Image (cartoon, rainbow, N blue to C red; front, side, top):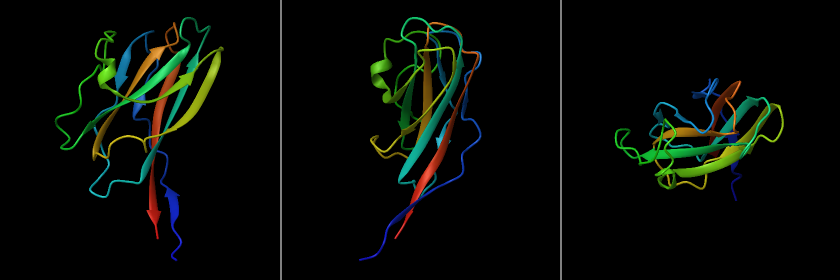
Length: 143
C-alpha cells in the first residue's frame, strides 16, 4: 500500500490586516484563488494584539466561497451590520481574554470545496485592535 504524506506550503504574507480595526467591525481579504489543483486543506492563522478586552473578548473568522471567483456567498464583509452573518461559513473563534497578543491556527477542511475564497474577520473584543493579521498556508498531499 502506498504511503500518503501531507506537506505544508509556505506561510503567506498577510491576507487580512486588522490593525486598527474598530470593535464589532468586519473586514475581508481580497479574493483568494486556490488554483486549479485545490489543496487538500488550508491552514489559516489569526494573530491579534488587544489591550483591555471587554464584552465578547474574541475575534471571529469566517469564509465566503465562490466557484467562479466572481459570485461569492452572501454575508457581511465590512461595517458593523451582523444581520446576515449566518450566511457566512464559520471557520473559528480566537479568544482574547487578556491584554496581549493572541494567536491560533484553524483548518478550512470542513468547508465545501471551492477554488475561490474570501476570509472575513469580525472584531468582538470590545475594543479597537492594536494590530492583527490573518495568514494562510496550503496543505498538499503526495502518494
